[in-house]
Image: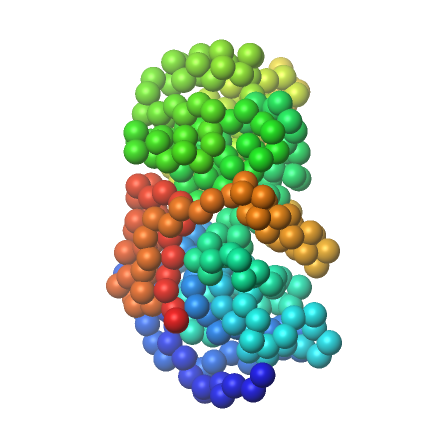
Length: 332
């Protein structure tokens, strides 16, 4: 496949830490891949909560940087002897995703099968890999387990609910509204509680439903739910914290884990899935679950590649009123 690669492209960039208004659309050079990288023509990109962490400076970046992670697109160039070919459709948790072209490490690119919609493929990248990695590595979900998913209607939360059900677990979700509760039930949760209800009542209900506490809590909320997690996880259970939607988890003494012999872990997708072998295994697992009917995808809203739309997408996701995946449409 031979295509004409333009010299420049449109991209959303940030020059300094700030609010959503610091996103800027500009014309920049198309990146040149290194010998172990591929060049992707981007069709769809995903909006993630971590975009706000980078933009505000919570997670340091070199400025200026191109915004976004997660892409579905078409391979344009590949390294010699690479197992995929130019012209094939791929998904990747690539950075600099809010752009018409991006590069990705060749060991972090997976073929998107023809039977999976491009918009769904975006969810398989960062959020999908996060969910499958946490379900297999942070705590290995087993048949009959009781699993609590905080922010169960969010991008990662909704996938965690479905993967846990696919693995045979009993799933309790917490959400902030009745409409979110309905969505989570539709995606397989056995029980859904409102996080706006009385905390003591929720603790009692979770412990009653699970017969004394859940084996694992997956918490993307952070500060607001942190203390409650210790009351609903059973002895020798695990708390997986993976997001700070309500603020960062406060420091705590290790002795807090002693009474129940608990484990607490705070992974990132790339600490869980780091090698080429891990990436290939887990992307294959995700595709298998989709084909088995175990994963459905909810798209909250589609935004365009403009500074105004990207800023609004970041406001929307940080406002905690969204469900499922937020997408940026880059090209047809």
